[in-house]
Length: 303
Ligand SMILES: [Zn+2]
Image (cartoon, rainbow, N blue to C red):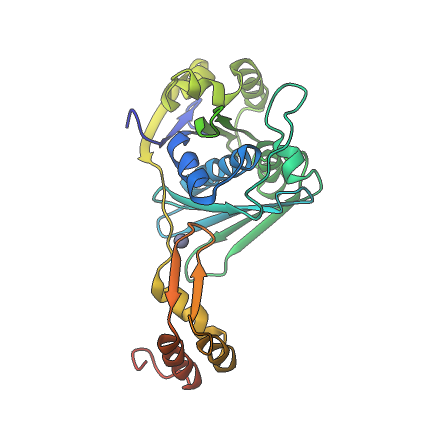
């Protein structure tokens, strides 16, 4: 895993601290290429994808999580989704956003996201009702907003760092993040200790750029508390879209809408907003879908 994206999970202070750290350079670059994002949008999407990857690491198998940041800035909204297997995907509503850097020379993610709005976390457990949590944005920088989410919505004191470094040619040079959480019943002084360690460590994108591996970053942060690595998982950008799912979405439009689409000489083209894949539906196929939309739903397997 030396060159690819991966996540390390660990505990420290004999299980009183739970920790995750990941390198996401490759998947953030793939997101940029798929969506044609400009640098500030690349950083916002990359931070959200990195945050989602770590939320994904908190899930059980078969579960999925969506992180959505909706602010009043020019980006519109940022959406990132992850599963427990390390697959992530996401998009920004307005990918062609680039703002002047901040006074410290950083990409102005907060300016692009907007400082007013909400962060939403939606956990999909498959058959059970999904869990939804939300908090107002505190800064629009995403990591701070996620920190606030954990504190307020899940009552878990956490430190979240997310970083994306964009190259002069607009490609992603380095990206990654970490999540440190103090478990219930832990020694109350641990929160302060973690804060101190985070303050001393510097921006996470710089650490990744200098070649520090996720396990080394965790060792730097938590070393004095005693780190125990629990496992590693590769991370990758992967979309879950396919023709069948989009056919079902078309059928859901109803017979009248499908008849309108079938009347177009070229039929319809649907573009997946998560990956940019294009699906063409010629008029004949839309007519067939229109017929199946008219039939009452029978028992499974009859249509
Ligand atoms: Zn897709």
